[in-house]
Structure formats: C-alpha cells, structure tokens
Amino acid sequence: MLIERIIFNILAFIFFILMFLKMVKKNDTNYVAILTIQALGITLSFIEIMNGIIEWSNTKLFSYIVSILLPVFVFYLDNRNVNIIEIAYFCVAKILEFFKQEKKSKKILNNLINKYPSSYLGHKMLAEIYEKEGGMRKAIDKYVKAIEIKRKDYDSYYKISELLNSLSQKDEAITMLNNLLKIKPDYYKASRLLGELLIENKMFKEALNVYKEAMVYRPNDYEIYYYMGIVYTNLNDFKNAKIAYEKASQINHLQYKSKYYLGKISMMYNDVNLAEKYFVEALSGEEVEAWSYYQLARIYMIKSDKEKAIVFLNKAIELDSNFIDEYKKDSIFIPIKVYISNKVNNNIVEKEKSLSTIEKDVLDHLEKTGSVMENLSDLEYKVRKKEKERKRENIIDNEKER
Image 1 (cartoon, helix red, strand yellow):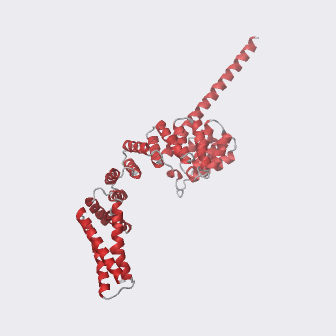
Image 2 (tube, helix red, strand yellow):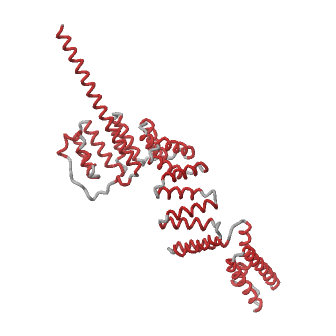
Image 3 (cartoon, helix red, strand yellow):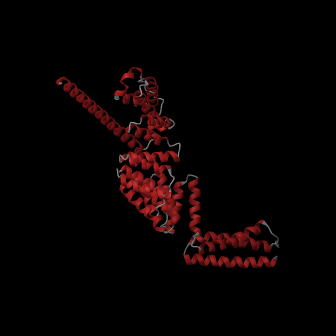
C-alpha cells in the first residue's frame, strides 16, 4: 500500500507539472484554481504518509479525484477542443442567473468573452439575458456573434428574426428567415413566422409557397393547413380555402376557428344547411363562440325560425356586446328587433381579443366578401324579378293585341 501511495504521488506531481505547463502555454491564470485543488490533494496524501495512514479513507479518495482524475478529465476535454475554464465560467453564470443575480451573471460572462472572445457559450447566454431584460439590439448583436462562432446555430438565426420583428423591422426579419430556410428548410418555426410576416405584408402568394414547402417536412400539420386556408381566403380562392380548413379540422378536431370560416364560406355559396352545421360545431370554440351564435341567428331568420333567431342573437350579445351595434345595422333582424336585449354585460371578457391580427383580418375579409356576395345575390334576384315582370307584361300586351 505504501508503494501504491508513492506511485500515486509521483503521478499526481507529474500531472501538476503538466497542468502548470498548460497554464504557461495558454497564458491563462484561470488554471491556478485547478492547480490549487491538485496541490491540496497532493498535500493531503503526503500528510497521510507522514502519519503512517495507508488504508483507504475519504481523504485518500478526495486526493485521487482532485490530483489524478481531475487533470485527466481536463486534458481529455482539451484534446476534444472543449475549454474547461469556459465551461466553469458558464456554469457559475448559470447558477447566478438561477438565483436571479443577472447583473453578476452578466459580469461573469463579460469576463469570459473578454478572456475568450470566441466563447460561443458566453455570447449566447449574454444574448438570452439581454433578450429577457428587453435589450433587443444588444441581444441581436450577441446572437450574431454566436452565429459567427457556430454557423449551424439555427436557433440564433431564428431568435434574431423574432427580435427584428419585435423592433418592427419586418423586411429584415423576412430576409433573415428566407436565408435560414435556404440552409435549413425543415426549420418549421422559421416557416411559420415567415408565413405570418408575409401575410401581414399582404404577400399572400409568397406565403402560400412557404407553407407548401413546409408541408414537405410536416405533411400532417394542422397549423400549416389552417394558415393555407387563411392565405387562400385572402386570395378569394374559397374553393381551396375550404379544402385547407377541412383538412385542418380533420387533423385537429378542436380547431373550431376553421369550422367558423367553413360556415362563412358555405354562406357565400348559399348552402345554408351546411353553414348551420359548421357554425353549430364552432360554438365549442371560445374565440368564435359569439360570432357563431350571431351567424346562426341570421340563418334562423332566413329559415323563418324567429324564436331560435331571438335566442341565438341574445346569446351572441350576452357573450359580446359589440353585436348590439352589429345587429342594428343588419336589416334581416328588423322583424325581431323589439325582442333583442341591448344590455351590455361588463363581466364578459371579449373572446375576440385572443385572436391574432391575421385571424381578425381574415374574419373581416370574410364578412366584407360575404356582404358583397349577398348584395350581388340580392341584385341578381331583383334583376331576375324585373325580367320576369317584363316578360309577363309582354305576354299580357300580346294577348291584348290578339
């Protein structure tokens, strides 16, 4: 056992010298901490030998770990181009962040990147902290640095796009996302955000191409079909919009907004019974519940079921008082106007607020397009009626002449 202790001390001393030479070679005083721990292990081992303690103990185990295993681990990581000092800084910064000590964490990270300008971990973590604090431009700078160090850091590409969008630099965000998808076409979050930005910019055909390319990698994603439906709706291609919304609903049965859009499209084509079916299904979706009650009230007026129309319109107003003004502008409700409540329910939170800007826009588009088509239908009806009356008058005139 004494020989084993002598061999241990020789090896420990050799590792100590090698670690010291590494510190000198790298000109990095941060290795002093490791050397100090090694020296502590060697010292404890000498003390045990001097006192004649040769059996295994916790002190001996500690000496082996810090004097042999620790330097071996450091050399192993160094051979794999992993900087143990960088990891140590990073871990300390993470611990400080966990305990809400962001200021101290940033100081540690700044010291790290000052010492190691090519520290990917340092730049990336600083970017994340700046982002949390709302320092968007500082965060972008650090994410850019992270990408320069690690070209395949696709998450940082995406983060920069998000931050540019939050700074209302949408064109720059679109460019960044297009570049990301060129090198990583299956990065779905980038496809989703790019599609939404293109829709907001009224670039519907470009958005459609983005969703079609994303579909190659996610053929059964309800979200892709849902947004394709929105794009087709904005392009007034209601046939393909209907197909996309139906596919979205099949994939996700809880996708009630698609049901509402399908109901509106069915109304445009005067398929009242199918529209009724879709609106009834859409009642389960909080975001479009009030709208669905309102549309069902209109359908029951068309079907001359005034009792149901009264119940459903009052329910729509109970859920969203905005429908008070809405129904007053709609001539179809004139016969039941006296039975409708005008009471505002201040305790109800408007569900429409949970809709995105894109979804609100497509709802407005469907409403406006539906109104135009209804007016055209009324005009067509009036023209046909006048044509019939004119033919009837001609027949009467011809009979009189005979």
